[in-house]
Image 1 (cartoon, rainbow over the protein chains, first blue to last red):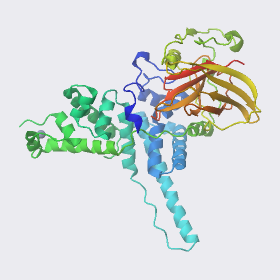
Image 2 (image 1 turned 180 degrees about the vertical axis):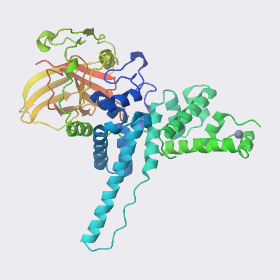
Image 3 (image 1 turned 90 degrees about the vertical axis):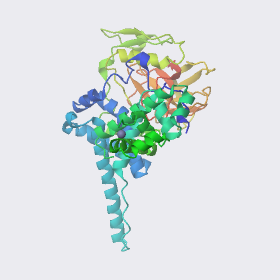
Image 4 (image 1 turned 60 degrees about the horizontal axis):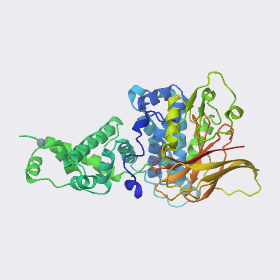
Length: 207
Length: 259
Ligand SMILES: [Zn+2]
């Protein structure tokens, strides 16, 4: 995939522009969450912009079916908006809450699939088919949260971590390629891993 | 006994070789080993994770708004604010009803490659709370017959040096509603994908129309509830495959529809 060879540091960061148009980068996740709870439609827009990828990618990996993943994503945001009164910002982050809803909708999905299978087996008087084994949703959720957090790392940390994760380069090879001091690369790696680990803990995803 | 350097533990988690002294320490230090185990789990998850989160298809957002009854709800509060567009905009007085308390914020000059939509974006950011209309529609590109009646057109000026030729946009009345045909055959193939947008004159709102393959002509439905009078600016951006539905701020072509 050519994603890694995109020009560095250009896409997500726009430091010279401060607030970015339709997306206000200086609006924190917490502010989006508060606006969401209060029924601000722009906060819904922003929540969708920030976290629909997380929800959708999780649903896609868990179901393996693009249509089901799209349906689940839609249901999650509709559920969340309608149930926003029950969201407690002090109890957890909005993406964490969205992911909780996502996991439930994925569970519903698998439950209805196995129910369908049982019904079919009964109607057709065949041997009960083996029930579909639900995927390890918790783990998938953790993978997606990690991908999301990785994407939020600033440059050059994101680039460095991606090279270490996906290109299997050693820290000295990375330093060489990026023409950076080895110590800088090492400390980016360590700080990034700490940040990724912290997100896993914050979102209360079982590691 | 001094513990291993924290960065060394991170490298162990990544599977790198370490020197014998650190290896000897790790063999007997529970604290460092625990640390390595936790970091290793992060690395494992990271390597299992997709490089990019697969973005939801565009119709999902439209579906959410429709299901919640939010479709077509115009965010009227920004209507009175008018920005001057860089290109010769069609006589603004005729297009935009005069409003009291109109704020005019000049856009940056157009001849700044890559700043095209960054300027739009920055200006919109200045209008605090500029709302986003994200009325995404079905995938673009459905061909329409030539019988549509031309109602507006625009020349899309290149905004970067590597686009040599201008593009064109035409709005046609078709039996199924208004469609916009965007000719961007001059756009080179690049990483990511091209996306076509309608932007309002106040540059507070964007509507994504859909993806446009490089070097092609695409036809998109103008979303119901969106009028080209309200959204006269046609913009083509280069979008990374990062799952972020927002405009990338990297605008390659833009023009203003003239009725
Ligand atoms: Zn130790």
